[in-house]
Each structure stands twice: as structure tokens, then as C-alpha cells.
Amino acid sequence: MSVKNKININNFLTYSIYLWYFFLVVLGLIVGSSAGDDHGDYIINWQRSLIERDPWQEADPVTGQLNVYGPLHPLMSFFYYFHPILPKFLYMLMFTLSNLYIFNLLKKKGYFNTFSNILFFFLAIPFNFLFINYIFIFGHNDALVFGLIVFGLVFRIQNSHALSGIFITLSILEKYYTVVLVPFILLDYFINKNFKDLYKFIIFSIMTALIVLLITFLLYGFNLNFLYNYFTAKSSTGVFSYLSSFKWYIDLFNNRLGHLDGVYDFLLKTSFFTMLIVYFSFLYFSISQKFKTYFSMSIALWIVFTLHSGSFMTYYIVVISLFLMIPLEENENLYIKLQNIALPYFIYLSVSSFLYLFASDGYGEILGHLRNISGFINLFLSLFSIFFLISISLQMNNRK
Image (cartoon, rainbow, N blue to C red; front, side, top):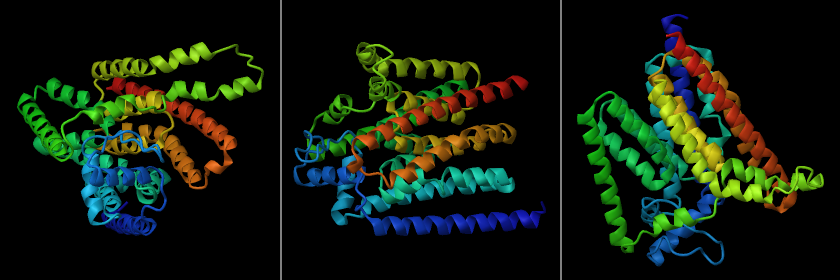
């Protein structure tokens, strides 16, 4: 391919992605908050934060809404006060800017000189209904987490360790799950004996957390209810919840597998600890095998969501964002193999998200069964992808 053709293709991709995101943002503004889903719960929480000045009170008696998000989340109520659509616009904007930033970094590295890379990138994020649905239609706050963690990790690559600490900490204070990435970041500093930048990262992370907590305490009073709500809230428990929710199938065949209630209860009670054991085992394994940081972080987060969060597809928004950043530090030959393995699962998430647009709780038990089946498909595809991604990475590392 000639240099002129490469420039033309890059220009075409640039114009296309900018126009596409402009269209999606306009679509999101037109839809507003009418699509409901989790954004409806955000609005209830922001209204209670403004009126009752207690964002972590007991569950709403009508909707059952309970704020299980971090101390950064209720501060968005002030944007909501100025205009109800403003928080969703900021979510969409943060996601769009961060994704365009990744796009431009990859373009500078010549990533889009290969058609398979173009196809993967656009199917994985811009044309993926996981993102279109939950960010631009439903307005989930995972868009904010996506943007914060992307900028935080990019700043780390660019040796802006103070900014990296600030953005990564803010992502944790919005939605706690990105704390999973912190051990990998800290260990990377230790392994490279980069203690000066490590101190800077830790100091600015602590300062950011203290400032957000101080603002929260001044506005809503001193309490730790944001932690209490998170740890006491009822939620799905991933792999083991699939076994439990699929009990109807076993009963359908006269319980041929025996009475498994005791097994279900044990698995559900120990699911969190099982997830921790697997997570820390992978942490040790990734260090011993000298995996690159972005690959390790994307797989670690993927493992945690698969084992503990089940089919909550919105969480995989951040997994895909991390995966798209792997070529910033990894050789092209390996990354092409990795993306070929990951793409079927990313497409599955897109298709599932598209079908969710047409789902209605009015179908009752039938919809519940379909969700159980979809959950099992998600489980097996996810575990299959994780296994082969690690296998390919090990194979390539052993060839070096």
C-alpha cells in the first residue's frame, strides 16, 4: 500500500469516526433519559441527593433504588440541577473523547494500515451495540469510568504519573471495580524500580480521594454509608448465580442431577472468595510469565466480571477499552492473534445488547429463561476466550 493511500484511508477513517460519534451523541441527546434502565435510578438518586442531602439513604420505597456507587457519583447531581440531560451528555462526551484519543494514538502507530485491525477496532467499539445501547441510549455511568481509566492509563504511558493517579482514582470513586487494576499498576512500578514516579502516583491518588471524600462529607455529612450500601446490596454472583438460576431446567427433568440446593447455597456464599483466589492467582501468574501490563489488566478485569458479575454486560465496556489499548505496548503479530480470539466474544456482546433493546419484562418467565440461557452462553464464551487469550500469549512469549 502506497503512502498516499495510507494517508487517504487514515483521513477517511478519521472523518468517519468523528461523524459517527457526532451522530451518536445527537441520538443520545434526543433520547435523553426516557430510555430508563439504570439512568432512571441515577436520576432518583440525584434528586434525593439535592432534596434530602443524603445520597446513601435506605432503598426508595417505590422503586427500590439503592445507591451502590462511589462518592463521586452523587456529585453529578449538581450538573443534573442545571439541566437533567447534562449528566448523560457528560458521560457520552467523556467516552467519546477517550475513544477518539485511543483512535488517534493507534493511528500514529500505523495500526490502521492493516484492514483486519480496522475491522476489529470498529466492530469492537464504535459499531458495537454494547456501547451504543448502554452509553448513548441508556446513559450508563460506565461511560465515565471508561473515559477516566483510558485517560489515566494513557497519561501513565506518557509519564504524566500525577495525572494518571488522579484519573484512575476518580474512576474508582465513581464505580469501584477498577480497583482491580491497581495491583498491576503498582507492581509494574516496583518491577521496573520506578519508585520516584510510584511515590508521585500514590501521593496524587491519595490527595484526589481525600478531596472527593472531603467534598462529599461537607455536602452530605460524615458517614461511610457508600461502603455499607455496596457491600450489603444484593447482586448477581456470576458463574454460581447461573447454576442457581438454571435450577428450573434441572427441575424440568425431574431433578435428575439430584437435590442440589445445598451445593448452590455453598457456591453462592463462597463465590466472592473464589473470585479473589482466582484473581490473585492470575496476578501472580501474569508476573511470573512477564505479561505486558495492559494485557494483564484486561484479562484480570475480564476474569473478575465473569466469575462475580455474571452477565452484567455493561461492565465489559471497560474490558474492551483496555483490550483496545494493548497494541500501545505490544507487538503487532501477537495482538492480531489476540484480537482474532476476542472478536467473536465482543460480537456476542454486541448482538446480545442489540436484542436487549427489544426485551420487555412483560414476557415474564419466558424472558427469565432466555436470560438464563444467554447468561450461560456468555459464561462459556467468556471462559473460552480468556483461556485461549492466555494460551496464545504464553505461546508467543515462549518463542522469544
